[in-house]
Amino acid sequence: MKQIIAIAGTTIGEAIRRKVLLVILLVGLVFLIVAPSLGALSARSETTILRATMLGIIQLTSAVIAIVLTVYMIPNEIERRTIYTILSKPVQRWQFLLGKYLGAVGALALMMLFMTIVMIAVFTGMQNGDFGRAVTLAQATMMFFVQMSLLAAVAVCFSTFVTPLVNFFLSGGIYLAGSLFAPMFDSLSKQQNTSQFSKTVTWAMTTFLPNFSYYNVQNPLINPSSTIQNPMSHYLFATGYGLMYISLLLFIGHYMFDHREV
Amino acid sequence: MAAAIETQKLTKSYKSKQLGIVNVVDNLDLYVEEGEIFGFLGPNGAGKTTTIKMLLGIIYPTSGEGYVLGKEIGDMDVHKIISYLPERPYYYEHMTGTELLRFYDSLFGNNDPAKVQRLLERVNLAADATKTISQYSKGMQQRVGLAQSLLNDPKLLFLDEPTGGLDPIAHTEIRDLILNFREEGRTVFISSHELSEVERICDRVAIIHRGVIRRQGKLTELLKGGRVEVEAEGITKEFEDSIKIEGAIISLKDGRLIVDMPEEADVNSLLDGIRSSKGSVTSVIPRRKRLEDLFVETVRDSSRVSMAEGGVEA
Image (cartoon, rainbow over all chains, first blue to last red; front, side):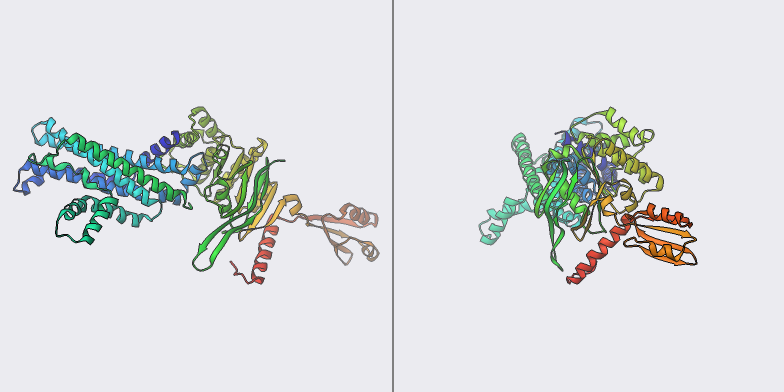
């Protein structure tokens, strides 16, 4: 366990110093700060637009950080030969992979926490000090964190056997498919006039790809008329689903990494 | 002496689109005794680093067997008592020397700041312990690398090009550290191109070319076959004719004698003979066989054999 914690700690230390990640974070923070001025461009309620924009910025920024952070993680260790000094110590490959993943999730948590604090501060300022309403938005970012941890697991899994560039598009593609198309596939499969082929494809996609849309819980927070029935059980289910998928992806990643020449 | 490393027909093959299956390491039989400094030599691409990676369990052999300190390669228990310094290592640049050593120490499940401090002092980095690795020179990075390789008090150290690209001062410092390792009873396995360095510090060497061990043995035995050149003046033709040394090349011109003889021949008898014939010895020059000569000769021979067998010259 000490080995995993040590590797995770080093990964966090390295990640929070990576300029590319800091630039992405900075862009996200700038957008969060200027988000209130974007409300003026819409005819809808300013508060609704502000909530939707801020949560959208955090989700998009976190997704880009999660992918950029993880696609280079294992290949860089191999290219720079740091992996050799680590694996020549009493460290198993699974410990190394798990340590790197947990480090990535830790760095992601720090960056998302920072963005959430800025979002709450800006929102509270715009709502004349209504801190309580601002904090409710944090519920969504917590679910985004589970979503990004799942996305990081997808990218770490692929990073054990594909190049970073391929991984970038592959992980990004799976995230988009899982976020946007899963609900669409779901409704398609329920329609009577859908062909059997489409239903099969729908079934395969929704069964094998992680469903990232479970974590898109921002609608009830943006629009009070929309609700999640029994939110606690939904959050617990989505978190459990995420942990299950993360375990599976890390297991596959470990299998590939263990059979790979480094 | 027990074996620190022993391999039997250890082989690593890769599939190549152009060449089919290529044996990067081919039926390697290696024997390294405990407590010795062993030089593992070969040109670029000979299979040195692949061999080290197999011995460390980082990559898997295609066939054959290998034992490190009596345990099968890849055994995690062995990793507690061996260490590795890779060629041109990279360390996490944001860390200080102390943080880096504490990180590596934690990989052994330890947290011993006093030991870290001692090791930094040992490699002369105590004064720079709070500098980040990015501020370290190449020599300092190599020294911190050696310090990390000593964290577990290893019985066996694998050093891949430990003095590569270092200035003469750093060279000497690293060499002295390696010599100290032998005095402490550690086994050191060095892969290097620095032949003069290897010749100075190694007890035994192996030369690998195209994945095959071409020579292996004690340096003193492998470097046998040097010559001694004796030069003298005031020598008569009669004395020249009386010289009977097997393998000697003798020339006499205007009373000046030059005898180029094998180093194992009796030089003292010749010198006594010159003196008793009223000649005077002007110089005695030993021409020892160098490791460089042996290395070049071995690689050339191996290349010639490969060419004769229809191989492709590297």
